[in-house]
Amino acid sequence: MRIDILTIFPEMFDGPFSHSIVKRAREKGLVDIHLHNIRDYATNKHRRVDDYPFGGGAGMVMMIEPVLNCINDLKNSREYDEIIFMTPDGELFDQPTANQFSTLKNIIMLCGHYKGIDERLREHVITREISIGDYVLSGGELAAAVVTDSIVRLLPGVLGDETSALSDSFQDGLLSPPVYTRPADYQGWKVPEILLSGHDRNIAEWRHEQSLDRTKKRRPGLLENQ
Image 1 (cartoon, one colour):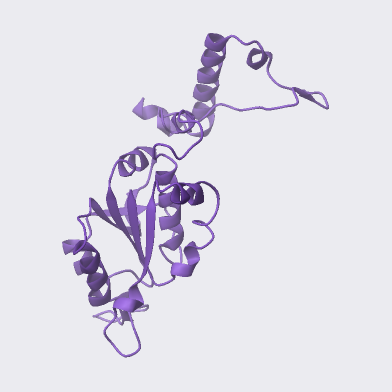
Image 2 (spheres, rainbow, N blue to C red):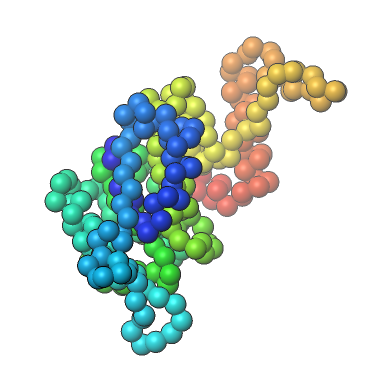
């Protein structure tokens, strides 16, 4: 899988993409992530990528030309399944969307800034608009890093245990059950006996019941889709 990220702050991805699962996936050649500085595609003297909004008002707007120049340059080399704009007013990102994105071959993520991008890009170029929550960040970089991480961990061969991602919260519409590890008794805090029983079927039933109970208490809205 190839992910191209368009940003004016490529250095913001140094930490998230240089450690843990994403780093291992890149080293294994399971994902190819490329960062593109939008300023490199500006044609003005000062590499400016923003301008004042027509009609007045506070804030600045990202210009069409540098963004489109970058996208067209990438599209000259390959076809893209999705061109994604990270924006607070996009569709809310969830696990099914992550699952879907993980099956794609090539995607572009555009990180917005200021008051957003020129609407004509959204009308004619962008194919998908994604939000990671109902709040506003300074830019789309953190959101793009979140989406990338959630996609990459689903790629075959990335996780040591292929079944691990299948037991994550939201994969079956429920929250994950509680988990425990050694020691079985720590200062009187004990692990539920069922998990020490060795009975796989009983353990699976217990985990499902715990997932259902936890979802009812913490995220009851998820059960409306069951």
